[in-house]
Image (cartoon, rainbow, N blue to C red; front, side, top):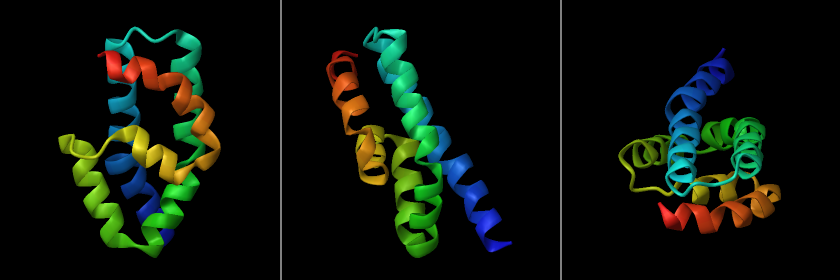
Length: 100
């Protein structure tokens, strides 16, 4: 029950803004569709790790969700922290993130 609540919290307040922020930045930077798809897939695949992290450290979850929502936390930094395997996707996206 608690894990389901954290999963909802993470999906709604952390993963949603993270994916939205990355998509907006990549769109503004005119990133190729393949790069956008790769980063989106990584963000989706990172969801279970984000839920685990949120359960271990609720303060991190709340502060990161607020920061992601208001723009003080870089979405690519959250993704890189949550899913180190996404470093290649983030590296491919980085030039387009800085362009927008």
